[in-house]
Length: 243
Length: 200
Image: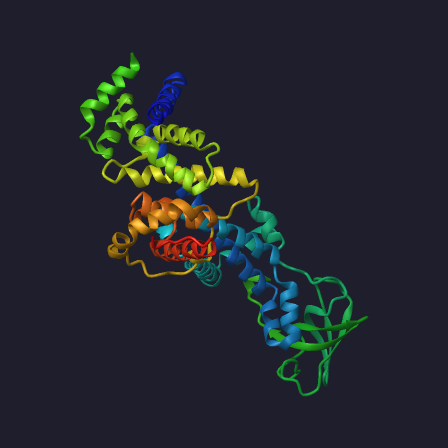
């Protein structure tokens, strides 16, 4: 009984192959598959590196790294202004890359957590290097300002400057006058209105020493009408390439 | 008529290894595929029944496995062992079968895949425990999680090595060792819960 059943199943399989005229996939089909996975993996890796590079550039361009030296309120502002949508995209890409690499033996033989951490460290380090050593972002930003980049880079770099929402206490401003711990500043990108920035007494995070009229400063504070009660200030030395 | 022909092919080729038979099929001898079906059909049926813990649809899935095996056979490297390769196809098919049966996404990512575990495989325990484990697997397996069932079946019933199992289920070799250890503990716990005597 079992013997007959056994042969029935075998014959069913063989007759299906014959009846449907099924054939073996040619050898090149498997090479193409490996090649396709490799190409998509390399593309995902390059895009991941680029995204990390862009996140770092965006933070640098908008001086948001200064928030980190402004204490707990600065850290809150850093998290608020962080480009989370890009980080989400980065996580999705690294996840895709992880899944693709697990198609290869070296991929699945490595513990998942180590692979994940390894991929994040590699893409972050490569992105950091790309941002800090090549000057590619400054060149792309300039070209995007002149609408000379192909899509989607024009749109991407067009949004690199993350202008704080109107009325927020964050601005990159030029000092118009200094009177003790009160600064009159103007923000050329937001409006022509002048703001009054009041620095806290005896706070190293926001001091007017070493400042002079005409300096560009990054200010973070609480805004009430045209006055900002500053909790953090950093003098900026803006790279000419990013002006 | 065709049936007689397959039998003649099989009769003359029984001494060939799986890899040699697969090579003949790759070279165009469709008839030799019957030998592979003959050799692996009972093993895949057993693997499927133990892994899915149900007899429903197993034959249909096994049919699909062989058809997929035939179509992808040129992707098999005849210099390597055939059994892990076909079990890899079977693993994917049975996992899909389990997903359909549970009607929910079955996630085969476990915490034991996250970090490294020692990958040393000692053959002595397998030889010592084989008879006892096989008896236990026959009775208490359906109470275990599918990923525990699978490693027990592949290791004790199909007699594959850690490395071969790792290639089939695509996890690090050390993960196979730790998963097998936990599966044995879970199986013994099931036995104690059901008041079965595993030493007998």
